[in-house]
View 1 (cartoon, rainbow, N blue to C red):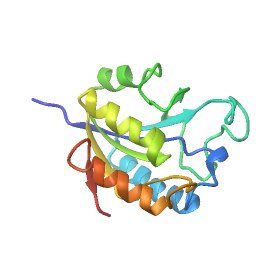
View 2 (cartoon, one colour):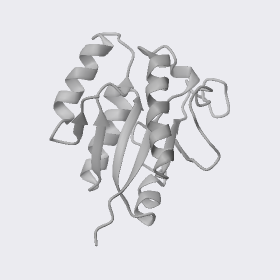
View 3 (cartoon, rainbow, N blue to C red):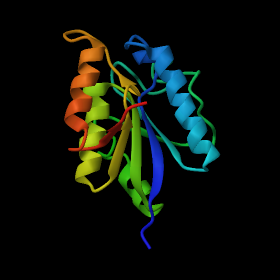
Length: 163
């Protein structure tokens, strides 16, 4: 029998990134997904980026206070855009027979995109709820960047589900 265990992977929803488009709205939507996963007793995993702009232990580095994190949730630190690179995430998922991930968080074109593509490459079935990720908008609007990436991901690297 094939185990189809699913986990929610929440990427980089940290204080130092609060200037992304629709940050508070995104947290509310992610918290709804967290609630759904808790009701089904499914694992919730948080990635927490650490670099010069988000130094370990600083207020900027902390996960957003409004995010519904609980003690039993797994938190991984990462030092690159790739949630799987030198974090222990792949081993954690494999050891728990988790083969499906729903991915959400920050930033669409960096860490979220990388997690989707690498996760797909590693054999995980990936799902993204449309709009459950966002970014800054220096060159393109966040809405355009989100739509662009969802179009690329859908049925290539992930299943993008419209909410």
